[in-house]
Length: 510
Ligand code: HEM
Image (tube, rainbow, N blue to C red; front, side, top):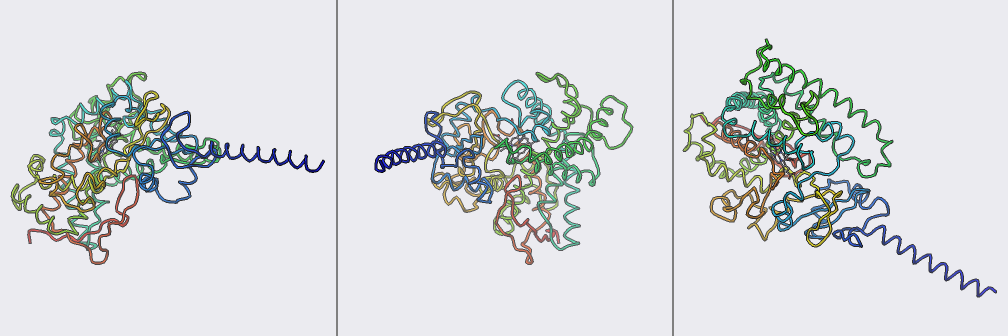
C-alpha cells in the first residue's frame, strides 16, 4: 500500500511542480509568446517589471540606458498593467516616426491626475492623433511660430533680455557669482507668458506662475496606480491635492485670460497689455472652434497656455546651462564664440535676432549642446493608432511606445569621440550633414521627429541663441572657485546639472 501511495504522491508532486514552472515562466516572461511582443527582461507575476524598476531607486532613463545594452533595438517592459515598447535604434525610430509617421503619431491613455490638468486631453502634447490635435497644433503654428509673428514679438525678447542682463549683473555684485539655471528659467518664462497673454507682468507674478507650473509637472509624474489601478484607493489624497493645485493654477491664470479678453473687446483699462490685439497666443484661442468641443472654455485656455509655458521653459533653460558649463570649463571655445560675436556686431553693438542667424559657431555650440546633453532622453510617450508591427514584433494599439533618443548621440558608430564636447564637428566634421528634423535619417533628435516634432523648436533655439550671445558678449564667464562646475546630471523634468552651475562673470568692457 505504502509504495503505491508514494508513487501517486510523487506523480502529483511532479505534476504540480511542472505546472508551477509553466505558470511562473508564463507570468514572468516579458514579450514573445503568441502575442509576438518584443522580448524583454523577465518580470514577476502580475506586476511584471514594475517593482524591479522601483527597487533600483534611480530614474527610469538610467534603467533603460542599461537594458538597451542587453536587449538592443526594441524591447518590452511590462510595468504592471501597462505595456511599454522601448525603441532605441536609429533605423527603427526613423521607420516608425518618419516612414510610417501617422501610424505612430498618437498618445497613450492618460492617468486620472494628468486628465485633471489636461481637461481630458485638450492639449497639443496629450491629444490623440486626430482632428482635435490637428486643429490645436495648426493654430499654435500659424498664430505663434510663423516668422512674421516671431518678428512682430521681437520687442518681448528685447524687454526680457534687458531685465535678464541687469538681474545677473546685480546677482553677481551681491553674491559674487551667477546662478545660471534659475535666471534663464525666469527670463524664458517671462517671454513665454508675454507671448501667450500679450501682457508685461511683474516679476513676482511671473515667479508664482513658474512655481505653480513646476508643481503641476511634479504632480503629473507617473505614480503606482497608473500601472496598477488596484492601488488607486491608497492615492486618494494625491488626487485631492491635484484638484486643489488645479484650482490654484486656474485662479492664477484665469485673471490674465479675462483681462486679455476685455482688452481684445476694447473694455480693458489697465496698463499691462503690451501686444496689439491678435498678437497674443490666447487671442487666437478665444475664437477657436475645436472638433468635438466647440468654443473653448476658460479652463481649457488655462491648460493650453500652461502647456506652452511649461514646454518652452525648462527645455531651453537646460540647454543654456549645459552650454555655459562647457564655455566655462573650456575657455578656448568661449573665446572663439566671443570672437564671432564681436566680428558680427562689435564689442558694444546690440545683438539682434537677425544677427544670431549669422553666427555659425554659435549654432554649432548649441547643436553640440543638444547632442551631448539632450534635455530629455525620451520624447513624449507615443502610441500606435492601430495594432501594427515594428522590427518584426507586434506593437499593440494600447501600448506606450517610448523612443529612447539619448543613445543616438552616444553611439560611437555614428559619432567620433561621442563623449567629447566639440562644436567644430558641426562646421567641418561628422556633424556637418545632421538634420535635426530626421527627414533624411536620424542621428540626434532633441525635438522629436515626424508628426509630433516640437512645433516650436525654432523659437526655442532663438531664445537659447539670444541668451548665449548676449551673455558672452557682455561678460567673460569663469568657474566659481568655491563651487567648481560639476558635470554630474540628474533628472528634473529635463536632464539638468545635479549641482546647478554657479559662474563668476567679469564685464568684457573693462
Ligand atoms: C529648445 C527647447 C525645446 C526642446 C528641446 C523641445 C523638445 C520637445 C520634444 C522632445 C517634444 C516631444 C516630441 C515627441 O513627442 O515626439 C516636444 C513637444 C512639444 N513642444 Fe517642444 N521643445 C522645446 C521648446 C518648445 C517651446 C518654446 C514650445 C512652445 C512655445 C514648445 C511646445 C511644444 C509642444 C506644444 C509640444 C507637443 C507637440 C505635439 O504633441 O504635437 N516646445 N518638444
